[in-house]
Structure formats: structure tokens, C-alpha cells
Length: 74
Image (tube, rainbow, N blue to C red; front, side, top):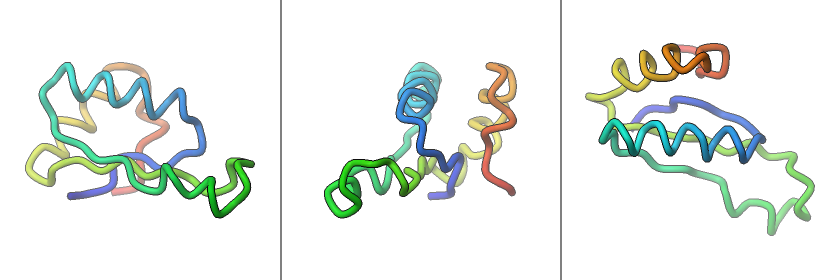
């Protein structure tokens, strides 16, 4: 799996998950439970990973949705 986005914005993560679900692209959100360690202040970003063979499609999907600026560097 490869990183698609890294953000502290839980709304963005939710929106991207909905886009990926709609397109049938498997994904995984990492670090979402780190708030237990950080005290729920949102300092640690969450990482959204997609299946490596679908990365190009997922990146194009986010660009089409106007979220291209949120993409992790290739």
C-alpha cells in the first residue's frame, strides 16, 4: 500500500474515504487512534493508504474532486 494523503483534518479523511469507496478503491487509514497518546489535540496526522496498483487512479480521482493539493508527494 502507498500513502495517498497525510492530514490532521478528519473531515478530509472522511471525504476521501467516501470518494475511494465510491470508486471501489481499497484503502486503509493509519494513526487514527494516536489521539490516545497525544491527548486528543490532533497533533499527529493520519495517513490514508491505497492499494499500490490503484494509486494512479486514486490520485486522479482526488484531483478531479478538487483535492489535488492534499495529495502526498509522489
